[in-house]
Amino acid sequence: MTRHIQCRPIAKGIAEGSALVSQEPVTFFGGVDPETGTVIEKNHPLNGQSISGRVLVFPTGKGSTVGSYVLYRLARNGKAPKGMVCQDAEPIVAVGAIISGIPMVDRPEDYEFETGQWIHIDGEKGSITVE
Amino acid sequence: MYLTRAEEETLNGNAGYTKQKAMEILVALGKIYEADRLIPIASAQIAGVSYRSLGDSGTEWIESLAGDEVEVPTTLNPAGMDLGRWRDMGIPEDFAKRQLHIIKAYSDLGITPTCSCTPYLAGNLPSFGQHVAWSESSAVCYANSVIGARTNREGGPSALAAALIGKTPNYGYHLSENRQPTLQVYVRSKLKRGSDFAALGFWMGRRAKNRVPYVSGVHSARLEDLKQLGAAMASSGGVALYHVEGVTPESRAVQVEPNEKISFGSRELRETYESLTTAKSGWVDLVCFGCPHCSLGEIQRIAELVRGKKVTEGLRLWVFTSAVVRSRAEEKGFVQAIERAGGQVFSDTCMVVAPMRDLGVRRMAVNSAKAAFYGPTVPKVDIVFESLEDSVRMATGDD
Image 1 (cartoon, each protein chain N blue to C red):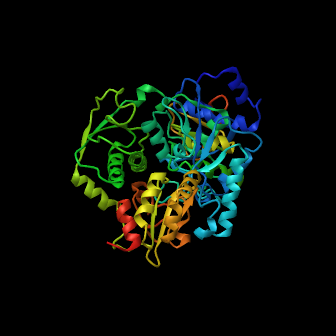
Image 2: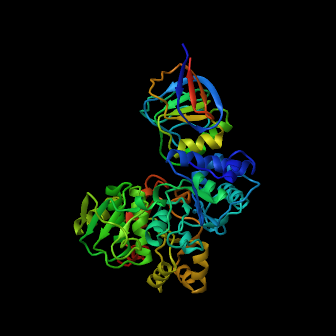
Image 3: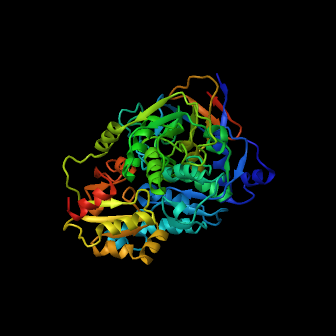
């Protein structure tokens, strides 16, 4: 069954991929290896997993504003997430997504995302489709 | 957020890739913070200049914007080295090459490579009520509080985007309603030295977080004191604006009805000095000043204190300032006086963003609470926090 979810467009573009869901905020600077896309932040629920090629679903970003450049570097290395869904976008992740060309949306209507779901996001119109 | 037709066109790419990317960033921020429109800015100040913080990926992004220029006067934060005297600092060749590359990428965008955290002392001085887009938290605090200009705490990319468009989204500290005090601070201790203001700021920032403190009980303060006060609270907390009763320009205009009141006495002052010192014993290998960058007055004071003295063998005394202030200090003979005593005056950089451990520094004495706060985590050095006068005495060995 396909489910359509309304949300707010943040960074334009269309993406689809397998969801990787984190209940904890993600720090890009110091929290994700820019060469591999692996989460390296200690005690993070995604520690050891790669965000590369996934649609990353997380509450919000945190940490240094240099985190925006880590997303850019991931994209240049071909290791960035395909798309991002935040509960509430904040400037580090939003700016990172824009400069890196990663489609991003936030404030999805009430819905519990699960890791492994196949998700389409439209960063232009502001919509998510879960298959 | 409302966009004019010209702004819409820029967003659609009609003004080229660089302006489009910049507009996308401003629109996203405006959306996140629910701004009603974009407003013109008088100037911008950009963080993310040191190779240590920007790295190769950040450099690549700045380079990718080449082909267009900023719309307003724009200055830069400190770099990882003195752009001319980096060899005297002991900076490795490879680091210098990458750092100069970053400076060129910014210059190609029409940005003035004034690398300083005190742009207001180096030619980028807004007037009361003007809107600006500054990153560099200490300069944000100074612009909002001491000058009465209006800026949010921008990140490097958002300040650059604002510079390229000449506008910023209208939210946060651009709006009068968000400039009202939300915390009252009573100062019950005499603040005698600049570092006392730094200690007060540090203590206050911890408690204020991102609120707007209103400070009573400080009857006079020099530019240097306010520079230290704001830098400290912007690092221990997220303070972007404070008011000092009878001292800062908006203190008369605001309504003081905060719901929390706190007091700073001599015990808090003493405890803050103790908490900022991380070194277990008294030795240091560097005594340094200039966080934020030294004013002409501070350099003069250091020159007077070292006159006729020598920096102890094996110890270094470094002064950090902007290139503009350094050249004035040279004209006045202050630089030469410090050099005769065995010290050095560097511009464009500071002890927080230079690769201090690579330069052989393990433990430094500072009169800045901001430098003391970042010392152990960013340049990874131990700290002795002292007044300017006591720090100079440590360097010249006369207790």
